[in-house]
Length: 192
Image 1: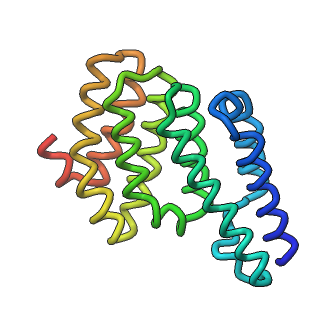
Image 2: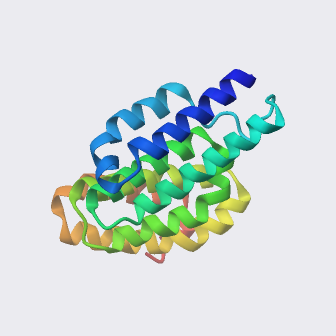
């Protein structure tokens, strides 16, 4: 376990410091970074349990830097940087329910903010797919239901209707997201 945690720490440090160092680098390297994150399960070690204290601390620092970087990318100035941030946010959340629970409210609010902006279609589609994954995960956890679903679902639904009116090419993705919202949260969907 020690070696696995150390490898994950080194990989996260390399990805964050090199492949995601700038917005341009993130946009150019997003496919490689996603492939590494998916294939190596870098976030399954939680708090570094099973490793020495020094290794666990280095791993926690690497994860913290990773989270700061993907948050920065998601709020970036270019659409490509925001796309990279959203894709990495989703994969991080899918691999680590603990990290998702810790950052769900902040990430969901950031994604809803991106929906409100005029964005490129691939970014909007990625944001919609990520939000669907987030609200799906929030269904089963009471705290997340309270912090994420009940506060954000009405805003998400309003943004989805606005997107459907402005971007007919995203109608399939929008309707899918609205269908999930109506199915999973019918009482929150009715006012929308």
